[in-house]
Length: 396
Image 1: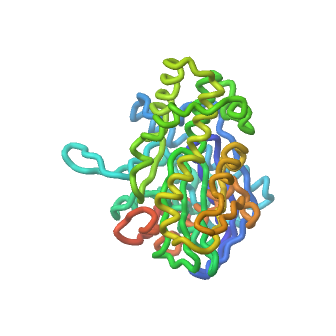
Image 2: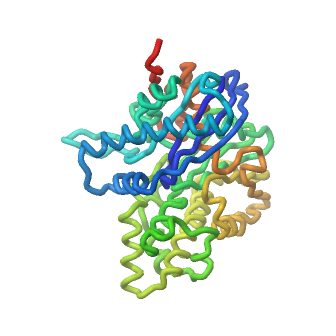
Image 3: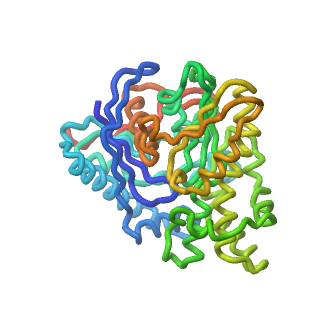
């Protein structure tokens, strides 16, 4: 099958589209990324998404309308990508759309006296199906939540299929808005896989830069602001006291933990201490590799034992930040006599920005064939379940 994977991540920069050829079934699933494209959101749409995802006041009307508007934009992105790839929709069999997350609460909270887990991804799949004429698998997280999991991370299933190695242990690190690990022992089986979010990836520093520049910059390109600043140890220590960093896996995070409220604490600290903007940006940037390395030493490394080489395979937008990568390389020096090698996923054939869209194409393929694709060791679910909901294209 040829499958299109669609996703807009936590940073809400736009819609990633991956065209993937898939055949077979696990453990002998054969995949090939054909093409990849990112279609940016219009600025006003991105602002609306970030406002909702940050928990600001809204109405049921606005949420419903934005759901359908994003459905139109996801459909347009799919069709625009196919035109760019010179592929007819008739040559594609299926779409897997993760949509746009605007709320995710992986652990139970009480509502009207009942503990409830909740998640919401918008980008109406019925609109995508009708506009493209293709069946769509969407809404991947809720089934895992219903099975007692956190609904995230889901990409580790694809990491397991693509990156397990008979002799080398591997840690697959994605640095998107949130950073997360997939931990693969040498010769790992599906039940051996562990995965969890480590904390913020680009989310905190991107939001901070937008606030400090009053929207003139959406992110710190090539870490230019951060490179001019200095680390503020007292601020870093305060940020690292956030309870998420001390919570053992399985765990997942989002704007609920590291969104606008978290950034406001950084800005308030800066005002109280008359800190320079570039110093705040450097400290927020370094929070990412420091929290990743802390999670590696606390929870990931013990799963691998103390011997044997380890590959750290890195993907996501964070690979474009030289300060984050240099700090990771410095922190992953040989430990316990074990060599640790940092690799960008492109070195293994997967462009760093394409991996999540690629993953949701694979997850859609598995759902279409009625096969479970969550990993209980990653999400904490009681059992493996078939993910997503299948929306037919509206025609016979």
